[in-house]
Image 1 (cartoon, rainbow, N blue to C red):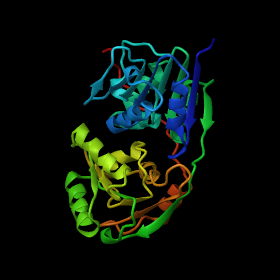
Image 2: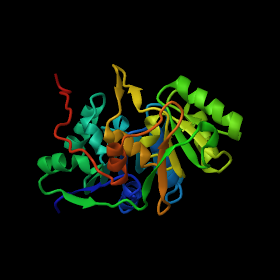
Image 3: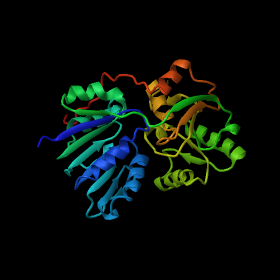
Length: 304
């Protein structure tokens, strides 16, 4: 039997990850590689509803939970075991192959990681042309977004609607904004990479359980954390990427804004704090789920 290679491509909130987990469950062994530790953890927890804990493993740069009889692995893309073979292999957010910092790892997975029976790539439609170039016979499923996304303009930090997430791009800004929201609204969750896994998971749980109605986070939230967020507010669209300060691309802003609205519930995005507005071209790009075509991805020779 020819090994099946397919892709689920589309904007946020299309059910791509859920579909991947359903595919995983059809096989005796499988692995899904995620772009974030938080995301691997979230889906590891979700898998407990379908599978015995003794069969599920979690591997990230921070956490390793590997039961003796583990059959299903939830990992960060960097942490996928090289010494094991799986019936099913899925790689999430494959458009990150075009990212200067980490792209080569995603490219390596796209080129080399194969399920014995099925390989599935998840991501934005921006990567479609590249995938077709590498695998002319790939089966591509284009998934539409389940809910509508609308721009609601500027809202003061003291007047944010409930079930809102505010995006900031530095630790100082995250805590400063969280403090202002706390003074006006009471409880608030904070999510950023510098927190330990336990603290971060506890902060996410507070928001998910409805104990707080506001969450302040870095852009990591844009990579697929399935939080029950109704509104996303940007406090800035400039970030330090390890080398320089730069303005986020339309696709990055759209990816983050797309976390608003879950399943069939419509979502909205806006601006707050120092950021007073988003340009009409950018708003149209987000509301119409547009994407920029990726024409090159990064690769690194691992056998020098």
